[in-house]
Image 1 (cartoon, rainbow over the protein chains, first blue to last red):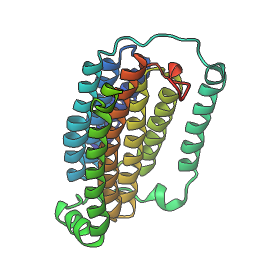
Image 2: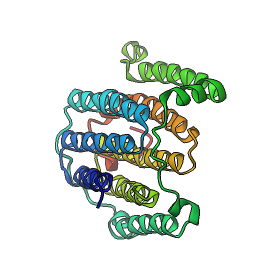
Image 3: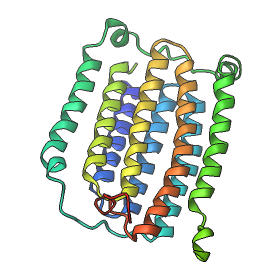
Image 4: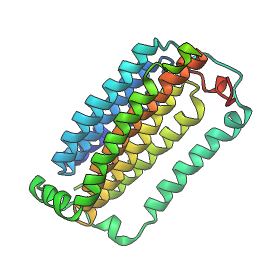
Length: 171
Length: 100
């Protein structure tokens, strides 16, 4: 066992345990903290693959901004332990087998994939952030500009959704 | 080095766990977080394939996915606040009718 493999398995186990904890925790804030564990573990895996910039963005945007938003909303809405209602029988009986079947299909498809995927290990050369930025701002510059527009629309949409409606007061 | 298959299988496992959480949880915030978990699993597969073919566009797509996830989180959490305001509940089984 070489060292990267050990690091990989440690991070993978942490990520899977975090995801299981996300499912099993009753309180939303505990689920959110479990999700942060998963994201940090995934950032470690990105570092292991040599994708430093993606790892940094994962920590800053996912682990920072998005999860702070989640935790903020959980606290704003004072979300408590989720109540158990009458469980949908379809989800109860078909949900877990179907989800396991989906997982198995994905894993089987990966496992029986072509030779190239299986044999080509990582080159070990770290993906330079410089090359990444060149690709982002040259080849993908129009999608990049579109994402800024998407963010703008999302900001306006979130503000419109979350504001108190003024019309209803004088109805 | 680590075989790329390991990354892809881990990605499949995380995606499946996200699906399980999506099906079994009743709290709308937790369901939303399970969607984020699935997006993370897909990102892992993107970066792994980017390493396999030694091509950086996979990582560029990860950045796009993260941007879309951020936009989705902003709008989705706005919708969740609205649901809580109108229904006084975060349980998805109480949000089964369009009218109030």
